[in-house]
Length: 173
Image 1: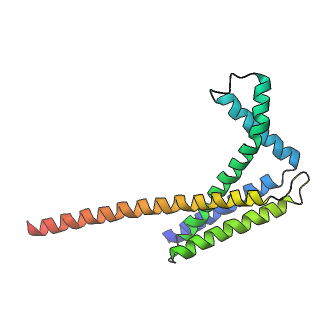
Image 2: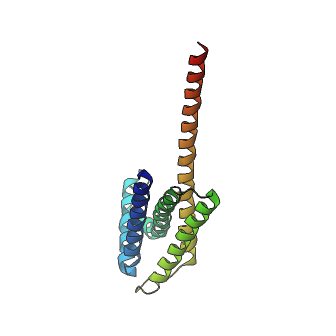
Image 3: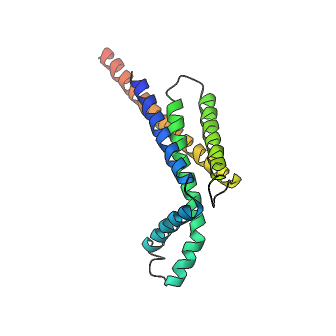
């Protein structure tokens, strides 16, 4: 029962993330660029090293920094995709290679279809570089889940060892 609830939760989170990605990809070139610029402006105005610069210098930073913000956004949202897919796959009793492979494949296929979707949006277009960045984000998300699972298992194993030591020391006494 608990496993089914986790599966439903992870699938819902994954679908919600796919929906958000779809909505961002459905923005035309002007809307998408405007959003990236707004985020970049906020970063430039927050960081101590850039917030006191001249308006002209800030404008140059925004112009050059927008592409970086866009690529970080790709990586970040696809990291969530990797986390949710791998967390979902981890609820099944299958080999790690299969869980890892299916997770990457699903993320890669969605990244490709997302870029294909953008080819129909005015002012947007598909990018193989974005597919690579997205896939790296998926892999990073998968690695985060694997690290969390490893830490959880280590604590669980350590707890079992301590319990076994207490039981055996109680039998001796």
